[in-house]
Length: 315
Image (tube, rainbow, N blue to C red; front, side, top):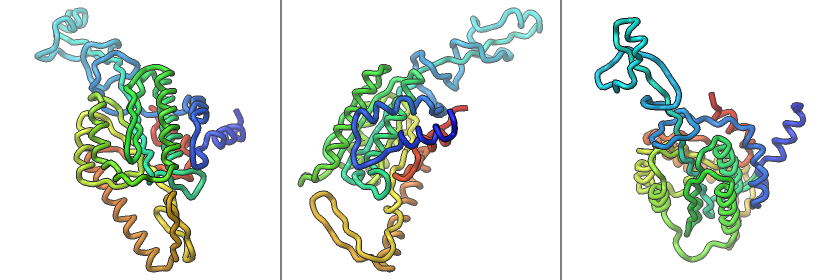
């Protein structure tokens, strides 16, 4: 395929618009096949599968030979090498073990915003679909956890196309709901979302959280710490360029779907807004570093496929 053809394909697969349709997410399967995503974290799962786990023991493929150490199983002694060297040697193995992949996708009202080619909510669904299809290509079990301000839907990890299609439909349903006017009920706390996510996630899973992490607080941090204790968590931070910097001075119209607000932007407002945004970002990034959670930042103007291929590449 020529460079021009690849560029046209990448443009066709870019996230666009204020909402998503299931057929668009299904169509990303071909794009996902071109990704080479890293499988780089710890593994605790005990079932056979398709990934090489970074620990030693009984397994499927021979790894190396070393001198016998106390505690090694007698049946793993290589008697030929032992006889030849007159020193006992043990054969070590690598095991292929599967890893459940859980995709947690934020579709709250705060995600229904965008100033570039798509809303944050659409970018989150688009990215989650790429990750889901790629995981299935690697023979992983794929599960989903989609949440809004007031409810969530979960799908247990399964290794099947049907499971991925079910997850994509959940993404579409919640994405459409994010465009509806907000109700009067108070939104659920992010800590409650993470607590429920932790409940359904088996230890040893790879957990991708795609969110703007709006309203992240100490309670949410505690739940995130518990989740990361026994799982590999990657935070995919979704943002829009306008969130970091307001437009130049002038008149700006804002809406939350129910009410409209006109704001006159001056230098002082710009400075105060940017300082508040920077403070929130520093707090979030510091929290994730403290918890040992890898962070990947995506903006609504980004080429997601290119970034995933570059930042999460396999060896």
